[in-house]
Length: 131
Image (tube, rainbow, N blue to C red; front, side):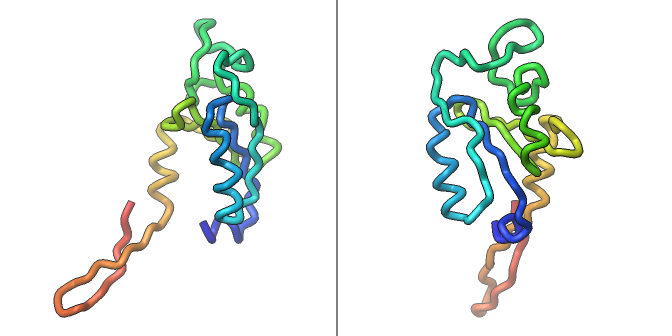
C-alpha cells in the first residue's frame, strides 16, 4: 500500500450500486490512497446499468457492454475498477489499455510483493514471498 500511496496513483472505484460502496472511503482513508468513489448510489434495481451483449442486465465486470460506465472512467484516473454486487469479481481499466481482460487480475495480485516472516529452527527468521 505504501508503494501505491507514494506513487500518487489516482484510483477510481465504482461499486456498481452495491452496498459495498460504504467500504471504499474508509479504505482510502485508512491507507492514505488517492481513491475516489465514482458512484455512491445504492440501487437494487440496477437501472443505471448498461445492458450486456444479449440485452440483459448483468453485473459482469469483464463485459465491455456491461462495463460502459467503468470504461468511461479510464481517462479520469490512472486506474479504475468496478466490482460486481458481492464484490468478488472486478473489472479494471487503465488509461493506456482500456478494460483489462478478466484473466489479468490474478497477474496484478501476483505482482504485489507480500512478505511474511517464517520462524525456523533455533529461533532463526527469514522473509518469504507469499501470494
